[in-house]
Image (cartoon, rainbow over all chains, first blue to last red; front, top):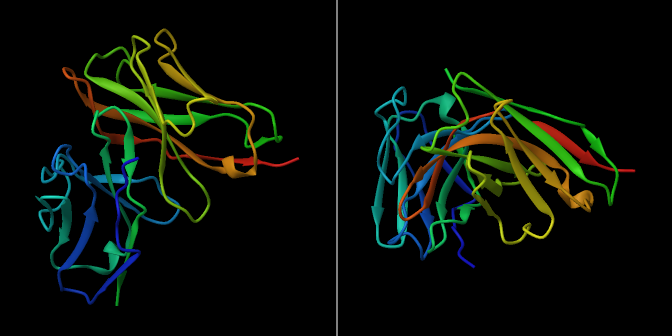
Length: 108
Length: 125
């Protein structure tokens, strides 16, 4: 079965750039999407189709893809960005959804 | 503005069936542009996709749960529902419903947006 692998945690200081990676062998074939989840809240989509940003999401959130790895980049990290981040894609058929294990971003 | 709200029992006994309903407001569920999905999150753990359904009852399920899951839709009530049978403590989780973007042909399941607020279901005797 396909898996998506994320680092358990990433730490950055305010104002710096955070990069959260998501590795999976399906990445060259399927799009990836990114969510932010704050404690006690439902996930919110930040990036869809590797690099598209929904309306209302600040420009400091961006996504990129290279081979089997997709990356969520948060520029000018703020204290409010401390949260869990999940990548999501699908299997090679495109009809079975998979989530990465999640990455906790700590703002030092 | 589209909103989704989960409802159902917060406590289910082991071996019984977990049943939840998601009520959609702000847009008809009978749009061919979307699927409607269920996702769960055990306490302190990550997200797990359960399954998705279209208004025309086309369904896709997580292979690891497929034998226990049924998702249905009621376009008249603008609702879709989840049944998970033979539950154990491992099924204790916050259950979310969400709208899912799709590519029609070939069918590709994309991202979820928006999500309901989630409802905690505990499996315990």
